[in-house]
Image 1 (cartoon, each protein chain N blue to C red):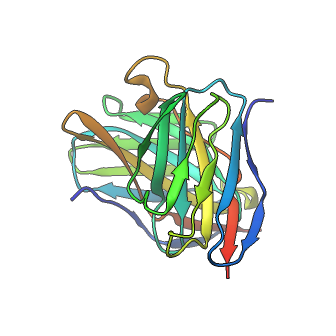
Image 2: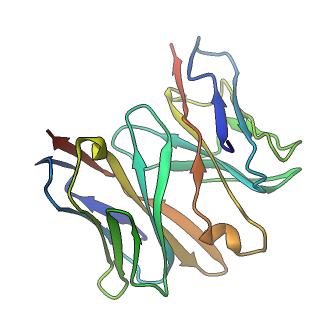
Length: 114
Length: 118
């Protein structure tokens, strides 16, 4: 069964800390992996999309890596700020025969304390 | 600015009533999606549409219906047959020019509609 797991479910850090959020998936036959941010009661905002042929993507203070062989992705946030507080979701597009299927993790709720 | 607009933000209905959630996008995206988000569960796909006048069931389509008469609009109707309709509903779209490119285009989301049925 294709699954996406995000650990920890919640994380609280002081402002300024560098931090890593984890996403693991059960099948290495993936098409791509996406990281999203969700603020309370709002929709999701796409942060980074990593294609299966790529190892990492960067946007500002965010860096996402992909290791298909180990079934892992990490989202690195440098110099965290209170405005980074949100839930971060990982979504993996798996290859499924002639189709593709997008599976979501449950997210990591991040609190950055001033 | 381009984006996806979902309305209303909050919706309250009595059990047994059908209700329609609006989703409009001005991103010129071909593909549109409806997801449901419940506490403790990942997002679940209800319906999706790759092109006007065509749509497909997702993983949890029972009790829901959609239409795609215009490229910009993808309304979702929650019918009385949906057993647990109270949830946060999210509409999304992607740029799907070319057969496979929708899978490599990031999803754009609206701000959601929170539906409460009592």
